[in-house]
Image (cartoon, rainbow, N blue to C red; front, side, top):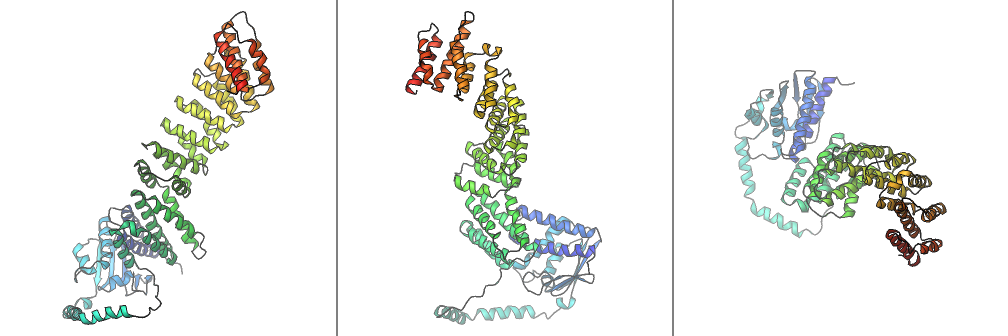
Length: 547
């Protein structure tokens, strides 16, 4: 029969308490997981209080009931929340709607006392009474409280008697060393108590013990049976990754990621477990995690390139935006280079997300994103890059034009052609080089058209020379013919401008290296124009001697 909504909500509260009990033992109150656990558990209580004003659990030895419905059952002694209350005499506990977050935190702390009892009177009932909760009521079995008053004294006496049996203990210790053979060990599942003890040991020497803890946590995964336990494992792994990054230990984080990836190839691991393990990879890309990573990169610690590339390979595309954010905050060049290499790898998975970085208000971030898109080489980025040609910052515009030249899609030609009309020579030159990089027939035609335009005659010599240099990359017959024709051209008026064009043509012929042009060049060695003579001699030398 399907459970009523309020009973379902009560069952969720119990599961949340069990999870909180584990988390409180693992994390200090300064850890974000501690606060998140309180928040999540409080949400489960609020959900129940939407149905009723009071939540009452009737407590049996191994069971909890809400009304007449059994909402919890555990026949085992370990991690049995029903037995935890029952053994100290609690038979019923009620939480009122006014139950506050502070009261919840205090109550959760009581749940962890089971492991750290220091005095005999430190039982659940006593702790509840000492806290004087305003919104928790409880019923205690009076018979349990009025048991034989001599019980405690008797228990203490028995302990003392056992302690006096030192000789027998020593003999047993000696016998254990004289044992000739060891029986096969029985492997039992780890309990929370075991894990708690292990964590305390690890705190004494974290560096040496971390790998052991990782092994233990993965053993917990293989033994886990429900979603709550899978989530616990993920939380533990994420916490170790966070700890490792904070302490500059990227190798340990990598060790976890490798082992996590291996689990996906283990057929005996449930699909639900594998689904939860994906959160480990997502955790890498969280804002807070990337920020910690940025601090590590900026700390000056040397990171092996191969190790970094492997680490980045585990990221999901959700890391793109956080990486863009820290790219504008990092102080050191090596740190920025590492982030750029990461974004080149990640950007291939999601060009659209990477392109959002082009809207960043920081010009240097935009320029880096353009560079990254150019390195990726995906023509899908062209539409985003076209907009950068009109950016307010000159450095961004130049980088955008360069990237368009690297991608070379047909849609870039109108934009690059228009750049020739820009008032800034740096933009015109950047567009010229981009067309030269594309090295297509269309690109050549655009350059030649510009060079035959009347406006080109008024261009500064240095810029003209750039055009001839780029044009010489084609080495086609029509380019050679154009250069020869320009070199032969005579002028009675504006002779200085014509000599500049002839000097540029000589420079271009020299770059092409066509020996057929040598006789023509030799005729101009004695030109009255110093500029022309210099370029002719240079061209002849380059063609004849290859330099």
